[in-house]
Image 1 (tube, helix red, strand yellow):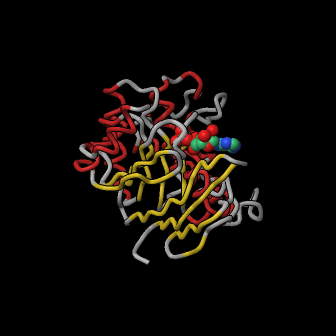
Image 2: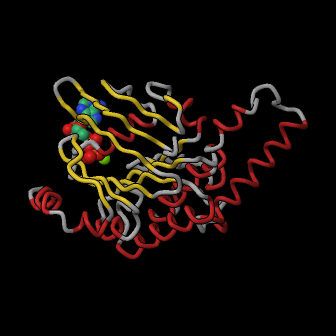
Image 3: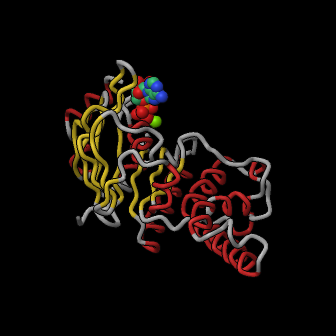
Length: 253
Ligand code: ADP
Ligand code: MG
């Protein structure tokens, strides 16, 4: 029960496609657990199973000792699992601050959002929500941009905004699907530094999918390598880097 999340023999099949094919893994508290693998190896599908987007064909997901397999996404979010998406899902016409405040929706609802609408308590909770959003924007370095329209920001800033939106719900576990995708190498390393800083300050556990190898190797505590839905290796970065199976999968891409 010491694990934050324990994945037990997860399979996710789409018709004949075995997108995830018998994955087991355990993630420790405050760990940054990396997942790499060629395109189509099942990384995003696994994240989608962990967050309730898909109900797995087989297997179990235990979160802090509780079985969350097959729970609806908002229930899982309410348990303390947040995520970002491989493709940005921001509200482009809204401000930066509004985008982050929306990230607290599940949390406010859990605290009785509907019941207190319009009351003093509601206004207080809205003020708190705003303060919390501003605090998270500061954490990701966007505090000066809170009234900008999301669509007007640079791509790298939008990626940080997406991270802020995931963090504002104060998750225990945060799943990041390619947070450095589309960033140049300097921006990518800054994103990785940011993730490490958040782990230090907020004591959040991360599962990190990342294509940028340099970024991954310098950030993850352990890395799981997937190929065709299966786990082909799992170890610390120094070992993964020199694993012939891993090298072969990447050269064969
Ligand atoms: P990765 O994130 O590692 O690139 P994905 O998890 O996106 O890989 O995809 C793994 C495999 O599952 C691919 O062959 C993909 O085409 C397939 N797949 C993913 N989602 C679906 C879906 N909703 N329906 C059918 N096939 C899917
Ligand atoms: Mg993917």
